[in-house]
Image (tube, one colour):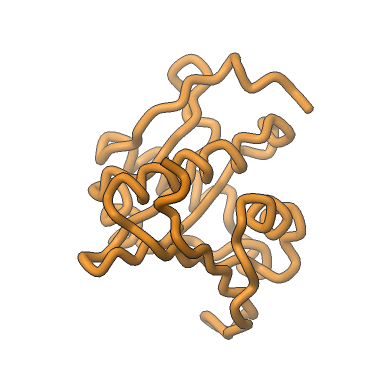
Length: 155
């Protein structure tokens, strides 16, 4: 495992919108692996106060986007790491940080979707306590819905 200490972890804001939309457009071209998020979804996550980014110097190298409802239900929209920065456990750490932020907002249940062919993401989610809920079809491709219950235990 590579040393993650050289990265800075920060709460993302609307200032990061264009960098994230550029990453989505440039790096998420294969919908079998990962679906691009809509602009509205990205904006909602950045406005929620529950999205985390990892930076090297001033460059965003990985992020986890999340939001929640008034009914204590959270949703992790996306977790992405630039290919050249994979192996530092950025996805695992940013998702764990997001779960803590969601818990701070009273969220008890968290959902996410992941491609059934994305073994690394599925493994990371399972290590964090997510369980497979069911398979669905989104925009013509299979997705696994993963579920985490009682995120308040992460405080």
